[in-house]
Amino acid sequence: MTDDVYAVDVAVRYQDVDALGHVNNAIYATYLEEARVQYLPDVLGDTGAIEAVLANLEIDYYRPVTLEDGFVTVEIEVVDVGTKSVTFEYEVYASGELAAEASTVQVAYDGEAKESVEIPEEWRQTLREFEGLN
Image 1 (cartoon, one colour):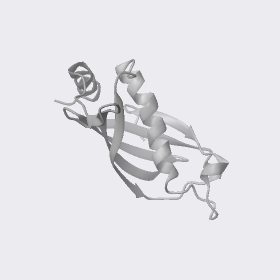
Image 2 (cartoon, one colour):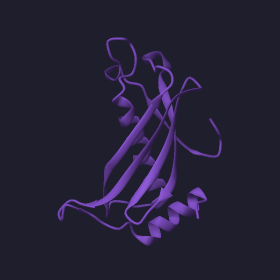
Image 3 (cartoon, rainbow, N blue to C red):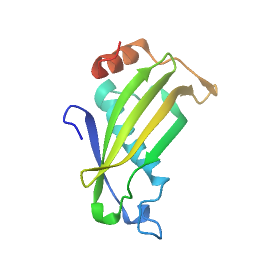
């Protein structure tokens, strides 16, 4: 874990745990989502004007997370900003140990028109500046 990245602590809930006592693999997607839901308004301000859909999700698991860990820390960063999409990378830590790495691609979407839309240039620029991207 590093000090210069955006990080969100997420509680490990009893309902997250499967019969083996580990957080179910699908729950990690929820942890990532919780990090994004905090990251975007913190970085962009009011993001209610544009909806986004998940276009891609990849997760590599390194160690089980258990209820005893209490919470996970999700480090999140934007690694690419396109015209209509944003690529995020994540590291998930439990008890200070790397538990998983992940990436997602979010696509701006108009639910009424049922099609992708462009992300406002101001938001693209803000994300690039925040992350130090060109």
